[in-house]
Image (cartoon, rainbow, N blue to C red):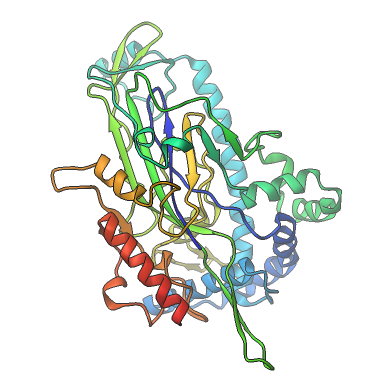
Length: 445
């Protein structure tokens, strides 16, 4: 089964929701499979890229489908033979990893320097009056306040979620576990040394997130009540993709094995914020605040994750954005554009690190209900009712239908009902109806 889930967070007021998943593949085996292709990647990528000709839009989509199939086979635990696409992507992944480590270290140093600069709002006002350029990013120490009244959270007022307030179910993030094993497992030292030698990426350069000793599942003392200026809620659909089908030749018995809930998409993102939100710095000077938009639900593909929840990087999605933006460049200097790739529809489930999250749970079943209240999604929709009625949820058919065997990343099975094949916003009741229909069609086919 796959579940919808809800979680909330606070930030002097805040509500967030996320859902989590345990990976059914060990981090060590993932690392070993990846590194086993490293030599082929480094040696073969140049030859492959040198032979890439100017691609049409159709060929780019075929390329993307091949990349997705490579990811499916890896997640399903299959032995993956080196091939041109895999070699090329492996080479790019190594380069991307090195770039990401460098960028993270640079950003961490920059944050420290910005904090130590102790910038005050009055300094920025004086620069503006003189016509001097303002910095793009500053760190201002102070207190968040609001002119309007307090805002409330949703979870403590919804049956089924109220009893879960204080529970945090963070998943074991496979990428974090890989980094931990590379640092501490003596059996992986040879592999880690080989990666350092060939790429310059050292496991010691990767920060510990969460910090050693922190558990993924924990309890929060926050309860989502009090004088709050901001609350935010995120509901994500968790699905089981890349199932494996086997048939016993003697008995003709067909078995389908689905992985643990391993991919997701955001189906609802809501926010309540007090009027006149502003910051008072240490000198008491005021600056009005404009928050980043609450738009982590995307009809056109996976958008940026909600920043107030402090999500760990979604490695696969970020890597594909990197490919789409920068393309591929061969040793001969030939550049292959990949900006016409289809959008990402599903991503790895979020690991959220904000200390203000006060509930982060997943439903035991496929329809988002919790014990005592099968209509949790309807309650959330009603809590965020607007002028046009209760809030709506994103229906993404790829998050409910099984993967297409041999198909591309963007494919929906042929047996899916025609009216369910489009990505669109629907009511909570319509979402549940479609989810049940998709489950029946998966079983029949």
